[in-house]
Image 1: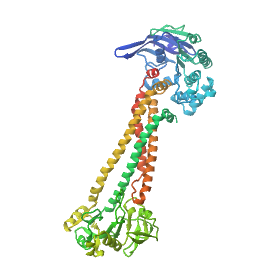
Image 2 (image 1 turned 90 degrees about the horizontal axis):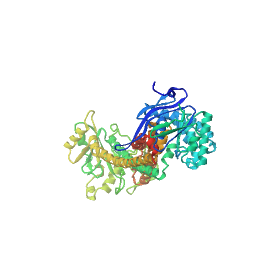
Image 3 (image 1 turned 180 degrees about the vertical axis):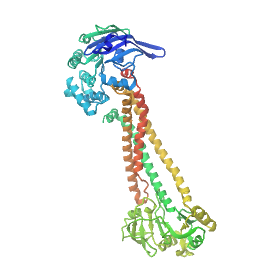
Image 4 (image 1 turned 30 degrees about the vertical axis):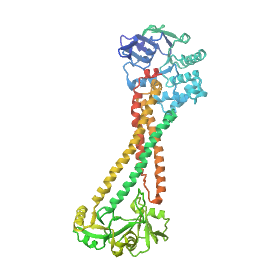
Length: 240
Length: 388
């Protein structure tokens, strides 16, 4: 603990990772070194963008910080709790309750309606179906989809689907929401609209956002931009 | 409800898989109902043969088509050590010609000399009317199936072998051999045998009153029926003595083999249905890899994913089970209704068969879903999310 950056244990730090390494095996004796000692911290209430060329380790960093994947070495803290040592159900539990994810391809479950998609995340976090549905309705209202609750994903536009995904990410009132190219599949106008929704949630609810993006316009709208290259954070844009 | 929606995302595939299970359960129910009926019939026979020895002439089964015996042999049997009482009976076919194809019991007419009273433990229950006695010539008591076939009513008449008999009693339904039996006086049955069954050459030299087709032999307390049966065969020529053990060996054991075979055939067809569930669920997991990644990303544990897929396969088993059970029940009930007129009541759908078939279908669905569900639960969320 003594070697950790100050921000790791500071009360306003949501994410603190230090010296993360991650290799993926692509085939026999063929490895991709996705992270080579990435260090980063994100404060509560920030909306940060992570940018960098393809293969720079942006998504991997986000996955490990969001408890979706585990590092080969290094340390990761989420809301002051060490998470790099967690595995299995413990990791799922933290991920479900403290992290929300938004993906490029929306990734809604096609057989479920908008409200069911949102409620599902709350149910996985332990809410009863009744409570989960009530919370899901509130969230869809927040993202401006009160009149689309019972629509299936195929009945919604791309922007609407991504709003449902934002509502789903928010339903457990997580410490942080992570977006992996959340505007990648949207046109410029819709992209702006979705970023605006995220900014509104960020401002009104104080939710921290970390957005991996290739789009400079999205990065511009964030509080700071973290640059990655070759598996390390090249510039943390003025973080801790 | 969500589970149901997930199953029917691929409607045709889900439908075909459920049809596969339904066919298996259908086969299990129909064949099981056949086995249940046969078991009940044999159990009825076991109950009848319990604690006594039945003596017939050689060459038949339970008096049917065996050479008739003379009433004098009753005294001979009574002298055999261990025998306490002997009762004479006459049995013949209800119809002149037995049905050419019969899967059930053949309709028969029976009469007893009444000497078994106080010794016989096999009791027939009456739904209507009264018991027949040997003074009741021209009268008849009908088993429930025979009564139904002949639209017989108490006080009415039925025709047997060209003669009209007054119906004085109808037996309770037992689902066993007595349902297809009629009871008459000794004199009437003996006359039918002498006049119609035996060749003229034989019957001309016979006094019909002396004809017996079987003797029920009751034993002294503590006597082993098998040993008494052996003694009877040793003391008397031209007779076959059947003990309860003999009956079980002759009928119950072959039935057990037959029952095992028909259950095995049904189970194989059900297992084929199970394989189609494995196939369907494996394809479903492959198609929904990305969705599994998303579910994990939003907090689903491995256990939650596993439960979801097992619930889907179990529900397919349940639906297939209900459909198969319904179809099987329809066929069994319809088959019984159609066969009732000819005495071919072949099926017996028991509660244990219904519950067993349904439970088996659900267990099969769950077990068939285990591997695909386990595979789904083990997927790495990051890799699953990248899956195209």
